[in-house]
Amino acid sequence: MSLTEILKNIIHPELKQNIVDAQILQSAEEKGNVIEITLLFKKQVDPFANTIKRNIEELLKKHYPDKNIQVQIRFPEKKVKQWQPLSKVKNIVAIASGKGGVGKSTVAANMAVTLAMSGYKIGLLDGDVYGPSIPKMFGLETQKPEVFINDDGTELIKPIEKYGVKVLSIGFFVDPSQALIWRGAMATSALKQLIEQTEWGELDILLIDMPPGTGDIHLTLVQTVAVTGAVIVTTPQEIALADVIKGISMFRNEHINVPVLGIIENMSWFTPAELPQNKYYIFGKGGGQRMAKHFNVPLLGQIPLVQSICEAGDKGVPIVNQHTVEADAFRNMCNNFLTSLEQRKQQPPSKKVEIKYK
Image (cartoon, rainbow, N blue to C red):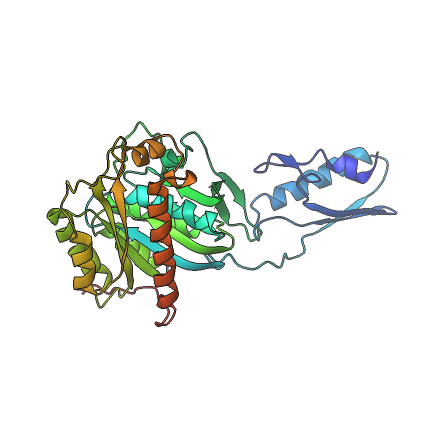
């Protein structure tokens, strides 16, 4: 039996693999009564290294009872780059709303798929930790992301990919039938972990579907990463538009200073399936246009209130996968968004926000 076969009996307690299959054993050579072994662990500091060393020494002495063997085990230092979150992500865009119920997640999901269909490398992070809905909109409620150990020992999450979009949500890790009863610190910590411990790879745009309002989650985001810009989703009604003012004011606060790339007006009008040419402005008319003009930002698009959009989201198949008038509205909106994002490059790059409390 070869040395390698013998050493397959040594199991790494955490990896649940033998040191050969786990590629920890780099070399094993017998030179007379000396056995030289080189081990290279995945982590910079492996807590089981000394235990494995003792187990190897005991195992080899049992296999060579008639020899006065010497076991020499080396642990060469593994040269690895330290993990840098989001290092290959070109743009980070927050999809926000002043209030709930305006269809922000529906817009974010269709926006992500539309951009991916256009050839862009897109990620979508469900930042609404209290009410994650992105897993359902992508038909991923039963999925669990893979968790793996990076070369430098960092535990990382691998997003789930569907419709060409890399998707991640706190909803993948919690029971959907249970409410998340978290204090602010727990919620913000969860968001930071999803951002900093995810292997997004190369992305042109990472869209972050934010919770409604302005609060701890939003501050955590701008303090954790340099946000390229924000998109505000609203409906035409006056109460929603009043909350848009708060949302834009937050991003434009002198301490935060995140550019607003534009406003998306959702549920702009109702069109019944049997009368596709009719428009009924049940939430008011032109509110998003007025707000965009007031803040001197683009109105990126107007999305109609159509039953098929809701049904598509409930089935986990975003409407933009279909050839419909509603899908065209999202495509036009994304074209305007890309134009605004390109114009954003003429401004100074974003920085992480440092907020000092007195």
